[in-house]
Image (cartoon, rainbow, N blue to C red; front, side, top):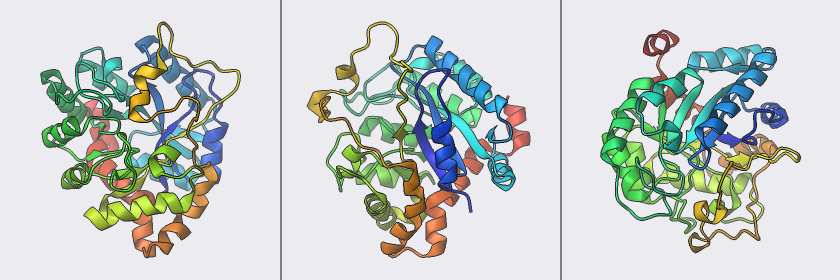
Length: 329
C-alpha cells in the first residue's frame, strides 16, 4: 500500500530543513509532492529553491529519492525511503514560454497548476475576474501533457478550470481542494468542477487547511467528511489526499523579493483574515485517516484507493514508465 500526499510546502528557501518530510514519512506517507514556487515567486527564487531541495535530496540518498515514475515510488517504499517530486503553483514561472515546462520536468517538477488565486497571461485565479483559458494557456496545457506532468486545477477559476479539463488530453487533478458544497469558500470547488475532474479520469485531493475544511482545529474526521462527499458524488476512484501542510521554519525568510503584497494574493474580500492565520492538520493525522475513512462506511479496498492508489493510477497514466520519461526528456 502506498500513501500519497499530493501537496505540501516547506519554506521557499534553498536551506529549508527536511525534518517535516521525515515526519510525514514516519506517519506512513510514502510519497509527497513538495511545492517549489508560485506565481508570486520570481524564477530566480524558484530555481534557487529547486537547486537547494535537489542538493538536500542528493546528500541523503539513504532517506530520500527524487522520482520520475510510479515505479520509482514503489521501489522507494520497498527500500524504506521517502519518494519526492516537485510542483509549481502558477504559470508565471514559465515566463510565457511553453518550452519551460519540459525544462521544469527535467528538474523534478511532476505537477503544475496555472494560476495562484489571481489571473495571469495563461489562466484565471479563483479570486479574480473570470476570462477563461487564454490562447497561450491552451498551448501550455499541450506542453504539460507532452512533458508528462500532472495538470492540476487547484487555485484556478471555475470557468478556467473547466476549460483546462476540456483541453487536456490526459487526466487532470485537484491536488489540494475541497467541496464547495460543504464549505462556502472561493478556494473550494463546485460539484461541476468535481464531476468534470472525474470525467477526465482524475482525482480531487482533499486539503487539510482549516479555512477549507470548515474546522478551526482540523483533524482526520474533517478530512474524511470531505473525502466521503467526493466519493458519494463521483465515486471513490476520484478521491485522494493532498493535505497542503505548510511547514514554517523560524530563521528562514522566504518572502518573495521585491514588491510583495499578501493582500493581493489572499484578498480580504475573499474571506482571508491576516489576523487569523489558518490551522493545518499535523503530519500525524496520516495515522488516523484510515480509521476516519472507515467510520464513513468505506471498506479497506476503498480506503487504499483514497490514500494512494487513485493518485498512483493517474500518475501512471500521465508520467508513464521510466523509459517513456527518458524519451520525453
